[in-house]
Length: 296
Image (tube, rainbow, N blue to C red; front, side, top):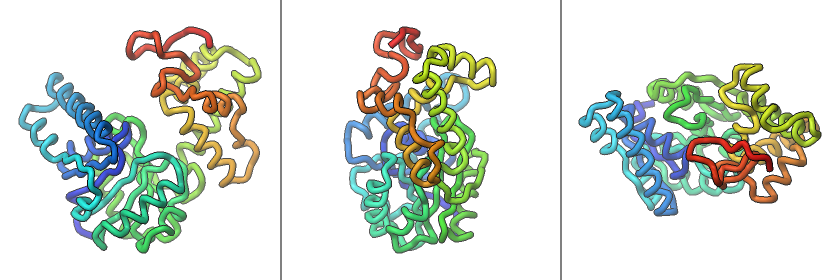
C-alpha cells in the first residue's frame, strides 16, 4: 500500500480536531468534516490557538505554523473525502450512528482507502460489516487529547488485512505515537481496564466509602495517577463513560461491568462533566482550568 499522504477526519469536536492537528503537524494533508459550521469554526480556532502557542514557546517557527495550517482544509461536503488515503471517524460513541457513517464513507472513498474508527469500545468487526471493504477497516483509537497523548491503540477486526494493519501502524508511528495492538474485544485494552476503575470509584462514592475529593486524592497520591478517577470521568464525559460500561457489560456478559446506579443517575440528570459545567464536580463558578471543591 502506498504511503498515506492525505487523510479525512469526520467530526470537528475535541477528538476530531486534535487528530487533524496532529496529522497536519506531521506533514499530512487533512480534510476535516463536520455537518455543523460552528463546530468547524471552533475546531479551526482551537487548532490555530494551539499552533500559535507552540510558536510563542519557540517550538515552531512562523513558517512552520503557516505550513501546518495550510495543510488543513475544513469541509462540509463528504464527497471531498474521495481524495483521502485514509478516513478516520471521531463521532459519537454509538454503533448505529457509526455504521450509518461507514455506509456513506464506503460509497465515497476510493477503493484503496482505509476506513478507521476512533471508537474506544465498539466492535471493529461489526462496523466493518456495514462496508464492502471489511479488510480495509481498522480501529485507530487516539487518547484524549490527541496532540498531547503519546498512545494510539490499533484494533484489528476479524477481516482486517495485514496490509491495512501495517499501513495504519506506519502512519501512527509517523505521527510520533507509540502503538499498542488489541484484538477486537469490547473495550479493547485501555478502556477495559480504565472504565471499571472509574465505575468502581462511582460505587465507592455511591456507597459512602469516602468523599469524591478523598477518592480522587487517594488515587492521585496513592497510585501516582495525574488525576483522580472521578475527575477523569468528568474530563472524558460521564455519558461516554456510561456508554462504554454498557458496551463492556453487554459484550463481555459479566455483571462486574454493570454501570454504577450513581453514574446512570448523573447522566440522566444531564450532569455530563466538564463539557456541561457539571458532573461529579461543579465547574460553573470556578476560575477557568480549576476544579471546584464544592460539594454537590
